[in-house]
Image (cartoon, rainbow, N blue to C red; front, top):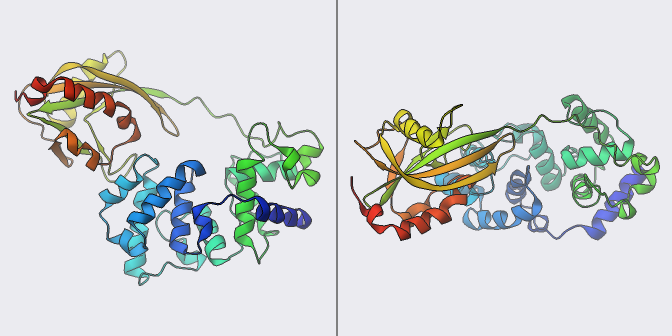
Amino acid sequence: MRKSVRKLLSWFHETKRDLPWRRTDDIYHIWVSEVMLQQTRVETVVAYYQRFLQRFPTVGELAAAPLQAVLKIWEGLGYYARARNLHRAAQMVMTEHDGHIPKEPDVFRRLPGVGDYICAAVMSIAVGYPLPVVDGNVLRVYARWTGLGDDIGAGGTRAAVGRALAAVIPADRPGDFNEAMMELGALVCTPRQPRCEVCPLAVDCYACIHDRVDELPVRRRKPAVPVYDVAVAVIVRAGRLYIQQRRPEGHLGGLWEFPGGKVRDGEEPMAAVVRECREEIGAEVSVLEQLAEVRHMYSHFGIRLRVYVCRLSASPPVPSQPHCWIRMAELVNYPFPAANHKFFGALKQWWADHPALVQADP
């Protein structure tokens, strides 16, 4: 296996992609990149990484920034807990570590959002600790390379692979080894139609030798992803629209949204949005018209989102969470979930086409 490792490192040295986080040894920059790369494609991350570091070039500037500014820069990248944890971790670096990011794995591991993957990636690439990264790409490469027949989705399998890689990761190039394994999985040893003809491990690969590339890795079938019907209200009043902020923790925590929620079984979406406004923000609304219907998928579920333009029928909302009435031009100042952005174009067009309704103050 060590001979194969040398081939892998040689391949990586000759063919690795020129990515911005590979041009630096700044631990903060590398940390930001690895947080962004979790569950997100490299092609998507590059632009976000560059914008983020332009806005927050140091850990101190990130720590001092309001969370809303961090979420706004992160808007569209998804998995917003990553941004909240990175912000909290930066603040801990400033208050508990004198502004220096810990370079000891056990200390760095205690920062918010730093799990096994982030710790191994940052400590190996930026500091040089021989800690193997085990992500989906690495598990796939390892399973085909060695003929591993265990379910790679099982926690015990992940731990076993980590121990096996710890025995072969080169002490002098741990970061290159980890990046090479991930790069190989991303570009060559792909889930479908892997490019075995250019793989540096092909001559030693169990799956390639035994013609089992399509059978490995083994992963138990995932259950079908549920799709929920959701209805939301864009409440318009006197040239402004109502928005509210989600709770700090949990799904999409800290982002802004329009009031609404799940449609109950047997309930019409239009009736659901009226009910949700009454229950959620204590407001009676009447529906003017349906604005849009969009679909959006998250990691474990999807939504079919119906959007209604509404006006108040009685007194103003009395929600328990932070809220405000904003002009259309101010919409860009607030971080919203990606699903909302899918109907913003329709909302802006409706706003322009219905000046009398926009300015009405019922």
